[in-house]
Length: 258
Length: 324
Image (cartoon, rainbow over all chains, first blue to last red; front, top):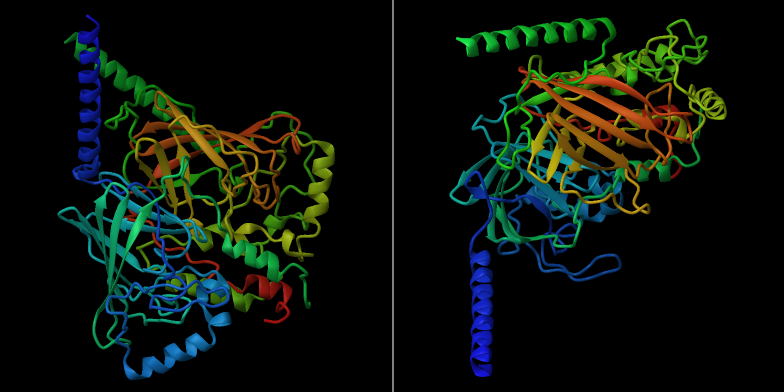
């Protein structure tokens, strides 16, 4: 009687463990879906130093070292643009529009700022909300084309579609005011970014961005990096109100002259 | 046959409720509370579905509605906004009359340039037009809080310091009360996410039953949790940082603020809205203001509202910061 009970118990335990193992592997392979598409809802962030420099770079005071996110590491600048990038780099402490003035960071820089962002995905709509200076980027999924107006935007205008399980976002209608990083890598208003968001498992997205700008580069080039889901309990965006903080600092003793 | 009559009767009843609501809306700029006539579609999890599209709000932004539900009308407050009142900040067309016209014209041109006709509205212009509340209506102020407010307002024109400039003019996060859209509602089950074109902010309302964040977390939009009761989403918000404002005339709020909002799906194009304000630092009792979200058929999408990126407002008001 005793033996039988023991054997039953062991069998039950084995069953439980096997079931748990199967469930875990199934979870790893099966993505949650929204209307048949991978569910990107959640809070995400990069774990790299691309915000400081998208290329390979050594460390320095206030500069975390990092392996770059540019495929092949080289950015194919036109000759004039090499000089412009060097000038930007030299003046970066006051010339970086995002770090120095809290301006909207542009695309793809918004993705790899050292702040989390939230993807909101329904059956019809997708929007990305970034904690840094509460940047918002709706991604229109209805198949409509980009506006034909010469309208220029800090964050561009985004049109998305699915290619299999990959979200492809075509971004145009940029201005020439944003930088790719704090190192002064830049573009013109002819910038055209194609982003690809591919979930590799429920907690990771492979993010790729192809950069094209015939005024600045000799050929298209590409960045890629993983995005990590923030798994902390109660993960959520808080406020990083850069513009407000900056004003509180700069205008603390205002008025200055009147 | 009986069924048809019943349906027809319901339909007529619905029309009556609808026209009563419309009459009320015209008369007071206020929304009617929920009618039961509308059956919202539901999401997979059973939640009512907010119809897809772009929505504008009226009756709340800047408290421009004259629908403050204060019943005890005392004599007109000298600082309440009327065009004849020189202290009224609303008497200024744009709230920035210490800035030269040339700049404003440039600003308007800039805004217009970025907003091709027929493609999007002009939030900057709307901002200048709002903020006119009905004279004579006042809120249940604590006397000392009202006195402090009046003293504050007297330092706003010209501004005696940064804190006398509203968030709206600073291109910073304006809070729950400024701005009337366009908005977009995205429902993902455990959250309602509201996108705002104005100041490009995102508001998240958690619907999964979680408690508010700790008192140590202070937020411009507060921390919002909600649940549905029938067609009505009830949202409770705390953890405000006390930096934003209700309007130009009520130029700040405090971090004791607690709001309760009701979003009621009234029909496919209308959400009746009310927000109850409870701030014991400023008011003797809670008060509420009502409004309405209307679906905008002519707006295809939320566009970019870049404000801080082009603004010279603070520099024009205060001069150049040292070292700049």
